[in-house]
Image (cartoon, rainbow over all chains, first blue to last red; front, side, top):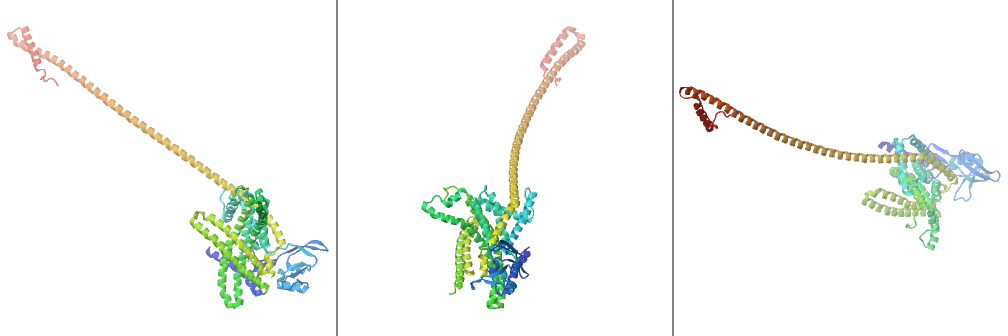
Length: 366
Length: 75
Length: 176
């Protein structure tokens, strides 16, 4: 068991190393941000990259609104309907790559994946392209559906309904479900109201947890280290909070009781800001935690390449054990963070919803 | 001075300051929590839960700072 | 410089996709997974709680029954002891009465026997006396046939015998 765990750890680390090593070998420089950021491809280097479908809604003066789909970025460029635009700070204007051979050269260099695609006619209204983080979010959703639909089927058959739960999966996930219900939902929402919000809390908890852990798997990407995805999650919390807000909740926002009138006018903007800041903080916290964790891991590995460049190959090899030791430590920390952040997001969501739906008396101190 | 260098400098300094603040904050939080746990071992679970929540809130503020540093560094 | 944009930039398409997917995921899981799972868990907990309550009640009941059983047994024991004691006392009394009666009977028998003996002795004495008298008379007759007539001699002998019996009644050997 112990050795199996060790092997798993080693495998995870090698999985992380493989893409980064190749990356460093390719470009002779290492960019941690690039690995953490989203992209229009799945990175399986050194085996290769899988480009994801590009979907655009385009408005042009000639044809009006139209939907364009391409299987890959490559095919979008080769179709001749789109061209790549590489933003650059130094050069003010967009560097248009329009000529046929330039397009092929761009594809060959691999930089087309980082380029912005611009239609030759009209403009992009909405870029619905598949991205890596979306794919991993979908993968996490698929995992959740597979696990929990099967589990629900088991409960419907009566296992766990009248008898004790059976098997590793049922015991494990039942413990987590009961944890979310008894330690997150009930204390914050109250025993009589929690049932309405429990499905959302459970979904958010397990989705975030799955995404976080998927990020630690070799070739995996962390969907929760994407601000857009965490923003959507936080938006759900925001909507649930505001839609279900009690009269007291709104009174506290727009006419805080127990205050002098002048203070009330000062408080109202603060309260309104607070309404939005809570979910924004929720989104940024999750995003930044996961991003920072991965950046730290990648930077620690990047130390090897930095030292090699600065002091030569011998020093580079010398740094390897230190770097890997720290990486292993941070990886373990990341597993902890994966659980803690899922817990924090869920418990804060429950707390915000619970605060909004509570019918508390006005004598209560604030 | 090169504005980009200044941005990098700002980002680095900002991250360091954020680390100081967060360290102080979480330290001030964790110390009494430990004391409380030692004094009342039966309340360990409650204390740990509220400690984690408070730590996450402090960390959240720190991460805002970190995001600003990101923006500065990669501008 | 392209990359920083990737980390922090908003991607409306991704937000749209993910909003839809997450909503679908939420609804699917709520309908087909969380509903059955949480209801099953609640049901199981209620079953466990109610069976615990029932077990508690049954335990209480059995304890109560056991208590009343013990009480009944104690009462029975007391009663049995009382009965035993009563029986013993009765037996004692009965025996004492029996002993008393037997003693009385024995003494009565003894008295009767003594009376019988006395009577027989009297009778025997009477018989002896007449026999002795007869013998004496016969003897005397034999004597007197020589020198006296019978009637005067007889009176003399009777008187003699009466004196004799009055004097020596107690030392008479025919007493046992």
